[in-house]
Length: 148
Image (cartoon, rainbow, N blue to C red; front, top):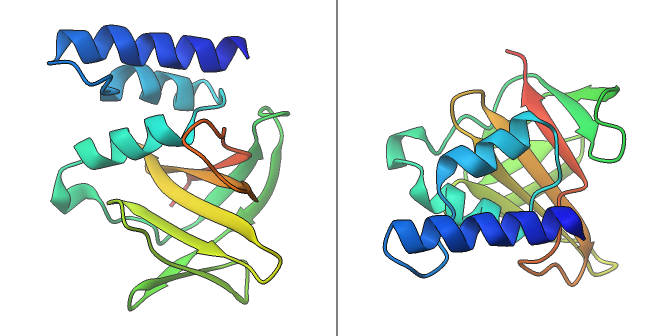
Protein backbone atom coordinates (compact mmCIF):
# COMPACT_ATOMS: atom_id res chain seq x y z
CA UNK A 1 0.00 0.00 0.00
CA UNK A 2 2.85 2.37 0.85
CA UNK A 3 4.48 1.80 -2.56
CA UNK A 4 1.21 2.48 -4.34
CA UNK A 5 0.75 5.70 -2.39
CA UNK A 6 4.36 6.69 -3.11
CA UNK A 7 3.91 6.02 -6.82
CA UNK A 8 0.68 8.04 -6.95
CA UNK A 9 2.23 10.87 -4.94
CA UNK A 10 5.21 11.02 -7.32
CA UNK A 11 2.86 11.15 -10.31
CA UNK A 12 0.89 14.00 -8.69
CA UNK A 13 3.97 16.10 -7.95
CA UNK A 14 5.59 15.51 -11.31
CA UNK A 15 2.31 15.86 -13.17
CA UNK A 16 1.87 19.30 -11.66
CA UNK A 17 5.42 20.24 -12.64
CA UNK A 18 4.97 19.24 -16.28
CA UNK A 19 1.51 20.54 -16.94
CA UNK A 20 -0.96 18.61 -14.80
CA UNK A 21 -2.99 15.46 -15.46
CA UNK A 22 -0.85 13.36 -13.07
CA UNK A 23 1.59 12.38 -15.78
CA UNK A 24 4.36 10.04 -14.65
CA UNK A 25 7.76 11.19 -15.82
CA UNK A 26 10.46 8.72 -16.67
CA UNK A 27 13.05 9.22 -13.92
CA UNK A 28 11.01 8.41 -10.77
CA UNK A 29 9.34 5.33 -12.25
CA UNK A 30 12.55 4.12 -13.86
CA UNK A 31 14.29 4.45 -10.49
CA UNK A 32 11.60 2.22 -8.96
CA UNK A 33 12.06 -0.31 -11.77
CA UNK A 34 15.83 -0.31 -11.32
CA UNK A 35 15.40 -0.79 -7.57
CA UNK A 36 13.12 -3.74 -8.43
CA UNK A 37 10.16 -2.21 -6.62
CA UNK A 38 6.55 -2.86 -7.70
CA UNK A 39 5.06 -0.30 -10.07
CA UNK A 40 1.45 0.36 -11.04
CA UNK A 41 0.11 -0.53 -14.47
CA UNK A 42 -1.22 3.01 -14.99
CA UNK A 43 2.21 4.49 -14.30
CA UNK A 44 3.85 1.99 -16.66
CA UNK A 45 1.37 2.86 -19.42
CA UNK A 46 2.00 6.59 -19.00
CA UNK A 47 5.75 6.00 -19.09
CA UNK A 48 5.43 3.88 -22.24
CA UNK A 49 3.48 6.68 -23.91
CA UNK A 50 6.41 9.02 -23.24
CA UNK A 51 8.90 6.72 -25.00
CA UNK A 52 9.97 8.07 -28.41
CA UNK A 53 8.49 5.97 -31.19
CA UNK A 54 11.87 4.73 -32.43
CA UNK A 55 12.66 3.30 -28.94
CA UNK A 56 9.39 1.43 -28.29
CA UNK A 57 10.64 -1.92 -29.63
CA UNK A 58 13.30 -4.11 -28.09
CA UNK A 59 11.08 -6.89 -26.78
CA UNK A 60 13.28 -9.55 -28.39
CA UNK A 61 16.39 -10.88 -26.69
CA UNK A 62 17.36 -12.73 -23.53
CA UNK A 63 15.87 -11.61 -20.24
CA UNK A 64 16.18 -12.64 -16.60
CA UNK A 65 12.78 -12.82 -14.91
CA UNK A 66 12.57 -11.56 -11.32
CA UNK A 67 9.53 -11.69 -9.04
CA UNK A 68 8.65 -8.45 -7.23
CA UNK A 69 8.24 -10.36 -3.96
CA UNK A 70 11.78 -11.76 -4.03
CA UNK A 71 13.67 -9.42 -6.39
CA UNK A 72 17.18 -10.50 -5.44
CA UNK A 73 16.74 -13.97 -6.91
CA UNK A 74 16.53 -14.53 -10.68
CA UNK A 75 13.76 -17.06 -11.29
CA UNK A 76 14.34 -18.07 -14.92
CA UNK A 77 15.46 -16.80 -18.30
CA UNK A 78 13.17 -16.09 -21.23
CA UNK A 79 13.83 -15.14 -24.84
CA UNK A 80 10.71 -13.55 -26.32
CA UNK A 81 10.43 -13.00 -30.06
CA UNK A 82 8.21 -10.60 -32.00
CA UNK A 83 6.61 -12.13 -35.08
CA UNK A 84 4.17 -9.88 -36.92
CA UNK A 85 1.97 -8.19 -34.33
CA UNK A 86 2.53 -10.90 -31.70
CA UNK A 87 5.08 -11.37 -28.96
CA UNK A 88 5.88 -15.05 -28.47
CA UNK A 89 7.25 -15.97 -25.04
CA UNK A 90 7.61 -19.05 -22.84
CA UNK A 91 7.42 -21.56 -25.72
CA UNK A 92 3.75 -21.56 -26.80
CA UNK A 93 2.36 -18.35 -25.32
CA UNK A 94 1.78 -15.14 -27.21
CA UNK A 95 0.38 -11.67 -26.67
CA UNK A 96 -0.79 -9.15 -29.25
CA UNK A 97 0.16 -5.52 -29.58
CA UNK A 98 -1.74 -3.56 -26.92
CA UNK A 99 -3.73 -0.41 -27.55
CA UNK A 100 -1.02 1.55 -25.74
CA UNK A 101 2.50 1.96 -27.19
CA UNK A 102 5.44 -0.25 -26.18
CA UNK A 103 3.16 -2.96 -24.78
CA UNK A 104 1.63 -6.36 -25.51
CA UNK A 105 -1.45 -7.86 -23.89
CA UNK A 106 -3.79 -10.83 -23.99
CA UNK A 107 -6.46 -12.63 -21.99
CA UNK A 108 -6.42 -16.42 -21.69
CA UNK A 109 -9.43 -18.76 -21.81
CA UNK A 110 -9.77 -18.57 -18.01
CA UNK A 111 -10.17 -14.80 -18.11
CA UNK A 112 -6.71 -14.00 -16.75
CA UNK A 113 -5.23 -10.91 -18.39
CA UNK A 114 -1.55 -10.43 -19.14
CA UNK A 115 0.16 -7.15 -19.91
CA UNK A 116 3.84 -6.70 -20.77
CA UNK A 117 5.15 -3.15 -21.09
CA UNK A 118 8.54 -1.51 -21.51
CA UNK A 119 9.46 0.05 -18.16
CA UNK A 120 13.06 1.18 -18.70
CA UNK A 121 14.17 2.17 -22.19
CA UNK A 122 17.86 2.53 -21.36
CA UNK A 123 18.23 -0.96 -19.86
CA UNK A 124 15.44 -2.66 -21.82
CA UNK A 125 13.53 -3.81 -18.72
CA UNK A 126 9.95 -5.00 -19.19
CA UNK A 127 7.25 -5.06 -16.50
CA UNK A 128 4.85 -8.02 -16.42
CA UNK A 129 1.31 -7.65 -15.06
CA UNK A 130 -1.16 -10.52 -14.74
CA UNK A 131 -4.44 -11.20 -13.01
CA UNK A 132 -8.20 -11.17 -13.24
CA UNK A 133 -9.54 -7.72 -14.11
CA UNK A 134 -6.30 -5.76 -14.39
CA UNK A 135 -6.70 -2.05 -13.65
CA UNK A 136 -4.32 0.89 -13.67
CA UNK A 137 -3.90 0.28 -9.91
CA UNK A 138 -2.61 -3.29 -10.43
CA UNK A 139 1.08 -3.80 -9.62
CA UNK A 140 3.51 -5.87 -11.64
CA UNK A 141 4.06 -9.47 -10.61
CA UNK A 142 7.53 -9.63 -12.10
CA UNK A 143 10.01 -7.80 -14.28
CA UNK A 144 12.15 -9.00 -17.16
CA UNK A 145 15.66 -7.52 -17.16
CA UNK A 146 17.35 -7.62 -20.55
CA UNK A 147 20.74 -9.32 -20.50
CA UNK A 148 21.43 -9.46 -24.26
